[in-house]
Image (tube, rainbow over all chains, first blue to last red; front, top):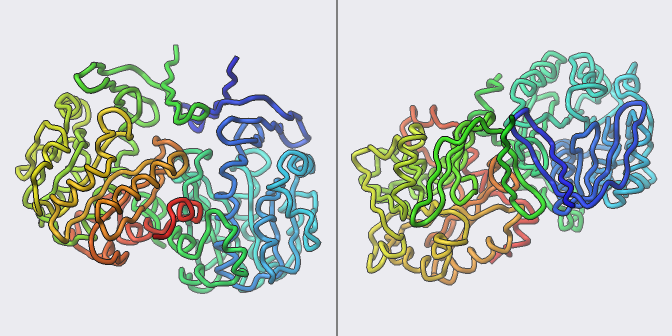
Length: 282
Length: 282
């Protein structure tokens, strides 16, 4: 018998992975969680039937979510991660000696439990003494906070269901208020191949929340829709791409990164024409 | 009834596309040709059952195959394309006023015929008066040629079957001899996700053929294995990335390109750590 997991990225196109078995399945208050063992990508975490992360290609997504904003900021001490219950973003953040506190705000405690059990390589940063895990809705945690964080990282699912609130103007506005004036918001921002209208909405929402720059950057992520993903970074002042190339990690950390380096960090902000045209130049 | 075409990129992972119908199928002396109509990617050209090009994402592959070496060279007049019977590479080449002659050397005339009929947007450059189509084996056409071409572009299938000869040290050596001393060889070089050992072989072959630099560059290509592709450029002298960013096309041509621009051309030569580690730094 051969088992194949197929994710339709659109009604007419998808990814298909041969699996050995299902390791874990549950329905939580918020979503369905499945973990399968695939031949090509190792263990795969699925939320509501969609691939969130795989052992083989998670390094690209997590490194690109974290290191561009951390380098751009240069001296971030206090970080909030909204979502990201698998721990991958936290693993990348604990590499930085400058970081004093990381708050992981995940709505679903069972994602964290499952990741600790089935993805030890992804979740290992969660045990760092600087990490505090809060099981709450990100938008509630932000309420009333002002100038507290250097960086807010939104590591969410797609803008449907529980995560929809994390793509609104209201949420972006709360983030802006909760950030220090040198602060940055960074979020996964969907596939340039399939989600250009969502990407346009994200840009509009961030600009109307008062950020003075909103910049997208891209990279391949083989198991995500179109094999092609984007992230967005928003902040104050004038965007300066060269800030992404500052040396701020100890040399040994640059050696162990599998995707990010100072060159590719900067380069990822260069966008293809169709993307530039879709989002406009404002 | 729903028809789904599935390409296994490895024994355990693949791409799946819903199709409306098969438009064309034949077996030539060299290979099987199929053209299907997909919902998401429009018409798809398959050779021996593998996706070669699709109406929706072909622009990425063809623009990235042609414009980086053309910009690096800066004044190429005489170009040889080996393979590329769909005409996509030629369409990008005829944009250049500097180009005097393009020789398309395709082994299988039926690929050209099928592309003219079913992919008018891809094949339209083939009617340019500077284009000569030769139906022959690329390695035979090169025999005895010296210093003739400014750029040789290898737009081949994977290194199996007929195309295997186009990945050998002997072929690279013929190319080097057939190139002017400022000449460049550019070739598709497989997926960074699945084919790192083939990529290493390509590098070794090109260096041992006497090219003084061998540089890879990458981009997402959603319908190719891993959604992630690479190309290689080899030449003499010292590689200078900034050469890729020279303005050498008329402004109106830059406006119509859908992927390539001077920024992303340069940026695509920035490689992620796992790729650099796999190919070594020599």
